[in-house]
Length: 347
Image (cartoon, rainbow, N blue to C red):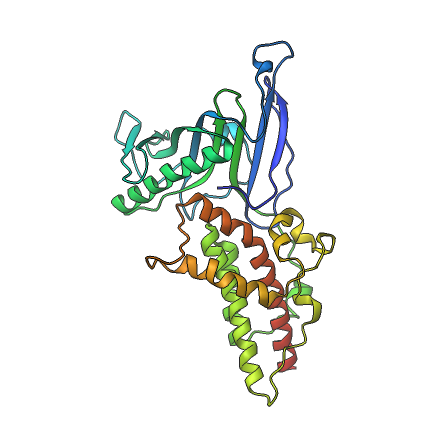
């Protein structure tokens, strides 16, 4: 699952511990970090070509499991501790780890090794793949591990999820880590927030969906919550327009227009520039309408022969993660304008 934030890449000496200072995301998010080791010049290891993208060869991918609703987002990324942690609500048989053979009718068979925690619960899922690059290894690992988690979840009727994963290229020792990280703490300015709040039935519904989107742990759920906010506001505006003889677009001006240039993007888009680029210069309504069929409907429905987005599919989740920052931004701005309309109506 590639991060919707810009990824970080660093080169470090092979020996010793290294620290990297990474700014926390504005809201709960996924952060990816790729580390390319640097060896002593003249050593045999130094002669091996390395790059953050990886190269054809063998990879080991380790997923760190987490309990939904308890600990999926991390406060700090202490990798050595994270990669030896993990927990779930499934207990392994005593005395051994578990190896699951996956027989896939449409693809080659594979094996997933589940490692236990000290308490005996399934803690990590590990798979080895032969791939052409780091991203290729990610995709192949997700295609094996996530359907396995879904099967075990159904079999035991227990939730199963992961907090992040490591991709390790065995020949070069290049690592990529991708983990869910808690967002920044925010200052609550009561003198600003409370006097400006006007509670209406429609506003309460919109705010509820926006909060649910921020709370969601999966990008599909988060996207749908923010999309519902934008979609509902579109419907509320149409209702208001029907009450006047000459329907018109409400005067929201440039506040509901994606800037035409990257330099004009808001501060909250700084870590998601690639997500905004395809929509530069578009009105919010145009963006929402363009995402309705390919994202919203594709997530909601599982009707055969229709375009579907599946949560176990690496590419589908990556697509959703890429547009999540834009729909969150649109929902927030449209909500601000809608709250303003409610305030004027009750004034």
